[in-house]
Amino acid sequence: SMNLEQVDKIMSKFEKQFEDLDVQSSTIEGAMGQAMTLSTPQGQVDSLIMEVATENHLEVTDQLMGLDPVSSAPVVETPSASGRKVAEEDDLSKRLAQLRG
Image (cartoon, rainbow, N blue to C red; front, side, top):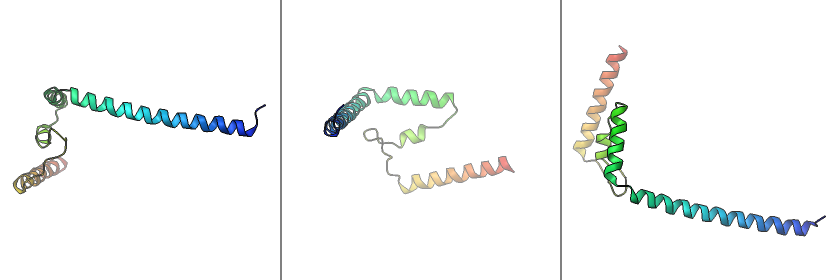
């Protein structure tokens, strides 16, 4: 039978190896994710999104046009664009009320 010190050493070594493996896995996953993101042409991604949206009767064109292609962050809206968005939401609210009523 092993004594407690040996068990403790083995467990500590196991935990360290497990943590090292976790760090390595995270690093590899991050690198692979970046490589895949950079290797996929933006045009193909956009056309696939549009195809799926068309098949499911979704409107995503305005949302896609509002993204910065480099960072995928929303582009800051101008006041006129913001006003259009509010008007569109009001129109949708009216249509919903008509459907319910």
